[in-house]
Image (cartoon, rainbow, N blue to C red; front, side, top):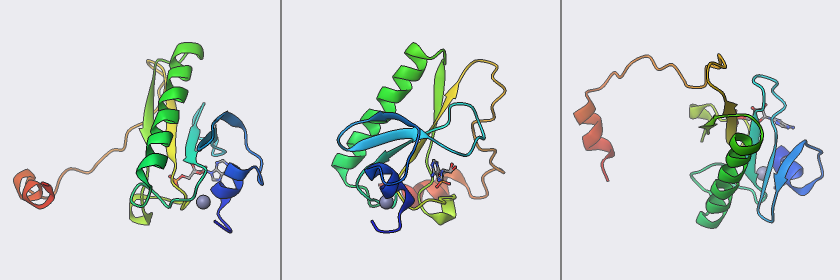
Amino acid sequence: MKDCIFCKIGSGEIPCLKVFEDEMTLAFMDIAKDVDGHILVIPKAHYKNILDCEPDALSAVAATVKKVSLHLTENCGYEGVNLLNASEECAGQSVPHFHIHIIPRKSKDGIDGWPHFDGAKEDIRTVFEKVRM
Ligand code: AMP
Ligand code: ZN
């Protein structure tokens, strides 16, 4: 997609620190410098987020997330990962091309890798009736 920074990274038009690549996906270092080893996995095709991502591309992204996560834990000295995704602006998505964040973790690494929620405001059964499928 024109003017999409992650499409340009996926096609090689904009350089990145490439961790892994296959036909449909790319894993590269996030430039945020917020936590050691922060990696993004994207489909090369443009989707805004999980809501419009086609099943094949989603499966390919999931397979690459797993491959990179296994590499981090088996070969790089990490013990686990946090996987993060924001889909839509209301959820905090800032780059409108689907991506999964991988945050490599070690015991006692001091990283705060999970959001701190304020506490549920609605009754769990009320929400359950709304969201059950
Ligand atoms: P999100 O807020 O979930 O949409 O995350 C977007 C992420 O993209 C942020 O963590 C940014 O640091 C990262 N980012 C933006 N531009 C680039 C870039 N050119 N190369 C690598 N990471 C980027
Ligand atoms: Zn794109």
